[in-house]
Length: 126
Figure 1: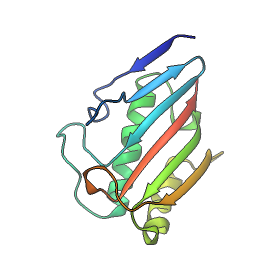
Figure 2: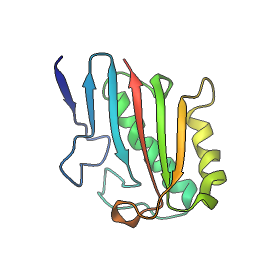
Figure 3: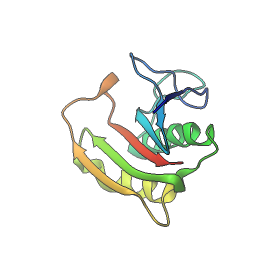
């Protein structure tokens, strides 16, 4: 079973010792994305809606680099620093997964890399 490392300019460069995504057979495991703009390498400004949009665009960029789309996502894990951001995050999330949404978990965590408000990771089927 060969492991394929996925790297694209359509998502931020990793800020640690990990790959943007790994493909094993017909599954792609996308590392958690935080609201970093890949063009600037900086955290995006704004509220949870803007940050959620940036994170989902990062995941979308990784998928599209492999000829896939958000409809290929089968599982999502969302990490929120404050569960009070659940509803506005969900408003944006719904626009990316409007039909046949993937399985999902959402948890509140005490701290995330770069002290951001959210991180989202995903698994997609090829």
